[in-house]
Image 1 (cartoon, rainbow, N blue to C red):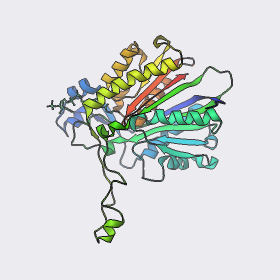
Image 2 (image 1 turned 60 degrees about the vertical axis):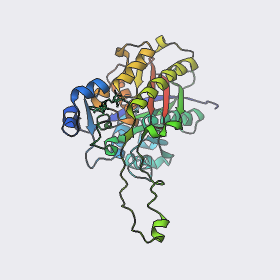
Image 3 (image 1 turned 90 degrees about the vertical axis):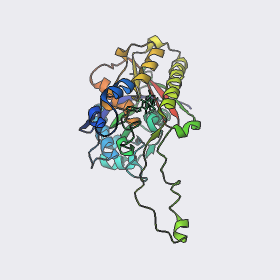
Image 4 (image 1 turned 135 degrees about the vertical axis):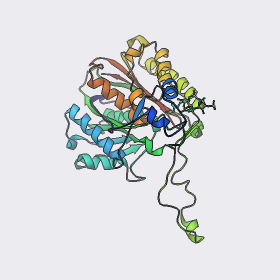
Length: 342
Ligand code: COA
C-alpha cells in the first residue's frame, strides 16, 4: 500500500453503563464465589446496559466523548466504523445507526460494522488506518461497543462471570508530514480452525427452520426472536490466547525494529488478568506499565481496548511521545495488535 499519510489518534472517549454487577451478585445466580472469579480471572465487577440501552447508544456516547477530545464536529467525520459482536439489529449496521445519532450522516461518508469479536477494535483501527493512509478518509471514527451481557447464559458459570457491557472510541486523523506520531503498524491474524472453541451458535443462515421450505411444508414460521448464548471451551481458549499474543507482540516489535524496552505502555484486551500478566511477562514489563481495567469492566469484547486506552489517556498516564502497544485476541480465533507513537 502506498502510504500518503500517517494516521494519529487525536481523541479518545468511552462510556460505561451505570449499573454495576458484582461477583457477589453473580454468586446468588450461579454456583460460584467472589474468590473463584477474582483469582481465576481478575474480575471484581462489570457493568450492565440498562434495559432500554442498545449498543448504538453506548457507542454514540463514547463517540461524542472522543469527538469532543479531538475537537471535531460530526460533519467532519467521513468514516464511521463500529466493531461489535452485539449489533442492535441484523441490519442496518450499528455504524449507520450511530452515524445518524451523531449527525455524521451529513457528510455521507461510509459507515459499516466490523465483526472480529474481541479483536474487533484492533481490526477496525487497522482498516481505518488504511483509509487515512490512502487519503480515502480524513476524519475517521473507530468505535468498539458491546452489550455482551445480552448473549450470555446467566445459568452458565463458565461464561457469565467473565463479560460486561461498554464502549470506547477514537478519532483518527492524518498527521502532518514528517511527524513521528501516530500508528506505526497494525498486525492482524485469524485461524478459522478454532471457530468452535468460542461462539454463539445461533444466527441467520443456520436458522434452518426458517425460509421457504418451512412455508411450502405448511409449517408455522419460527419465532421472530433469535436468541443465542456464548459457548466457550475456556481452558483451550486460554492456552491459544497466551501463545498467539506472545508471538504477536514479538512480531509487532520486530516489524518496527524496536525492542521490548522501548515500550512505555501495554494496553491489552481485558479478558483475564492471568493472560494479561503472561503477555506483560513476555515483554518484560512491570504491571505498572500495563493498563488494567478487567477488575472493573470484565471482558467487554470489542470495547475493552478503547475503554482501557481512554482511561489511561484521560488520567495522564499516556503522554505525547510514548510508545503504546495495543493487542487483542478473540473468537474465530482472531488476534491483532497496533503499535502507536502517542
Ligand atoms: N465458579 C466456580 N467454579 C467454576 C466457574 C465459576 N464461575 N467456572 C468454572 N468453574 C469450575 C469448572 O466447572 C471446573 O470444575 P471441575 O474441575 O469440577 O470440572 C473448574 O472450575 C476448572 O475449570 P477450568 O475451565 O479448567 O478453569 P480455568 O482455570 O481454565 O478457568 C476460565 C476458567 C474461563 C477463567 C479460563 O479458562 C479463562 O479465562 N479462559 C479464557 C477465556 C477468555 O478469555 N475468553 C475470551 C477470549 S476473548
